[in-house]
Length: 389
Image (spheres, rainbow, N blue to C red):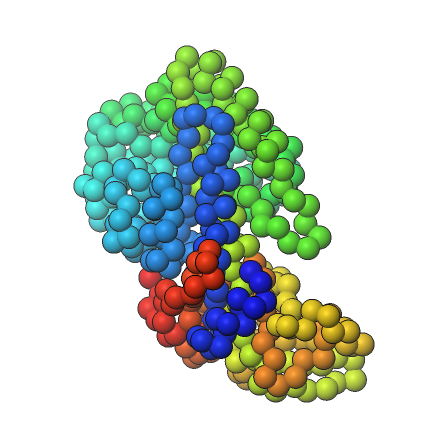
């Protein structure tokens, strides 16, 4: 998003605010829609961004939706998604919620032996998927492998099959989540191959759901090779379908990769403090409104709006919120021009897990959310202090 567009939006709508670029959203959706493998579906993961206007945009672009709560399920229905366009996957789902999901006809992936048994009691004779915990964990993350709390282990598959037979359930799909921000294509494909191996246990298999994990371009992060991914995943699923004697549908659930690089977060400098080794720029926001640092200890790249050509200050800048919380940092050690009161700071790659992860404990109003169309026109898609679906 160009600085003049950001500046215009800030003048009109104030700060703090999230600004989304519709052209980039459409580009990202088209990237997944352009995969050569013909039997595929793409479902946006609503946890990454739950703005109703953006969900309606995604729906209009032909994507389905993936949810992990009944609250987001109801939101998806309100935004125009039909039950057949929704995938529900979670852990520890209560009986009443499973009954609601079954009555709607929303497709569900079950996370455990116990959850599969419960679904069988509620909806015998129905179809569902099973979430797998694969043992290929080159990344050493918490999403798969021995440390993961999610999915059924390979050793539990015989019990899964026994329960399915007892309740006449058709296990038509497998579901995995290989990790987040996976930049290594070889690592991702290794996880896919292991998933397909375990999927051979299921005679009625119709789809394999690979979740998300695609990275967002950031400084110092290698760019993900989507064309090569297209080639390799198409070849892999084409061969696997031939082995199974029928076309197996590929399901993807991109979250962060759909909106991550399509938005910026803007906040105004209210005060500046000099310290011997750094400067402190206090802004009209807080880490609770852009909470990546609170959850992950990571910071988004930041610039001073309209100051790209200015020399960088000789000491780093910490960006802090306008609260008394001692850990309220939006950036640490940023290399910036000397920030002044009234400057606007622009944080990049904030479209996913930004607004949707906000907390309320610091008492600040939720920022405005603004969508910038391809022609540069901008409109509010959630007012300041607006409800958080």
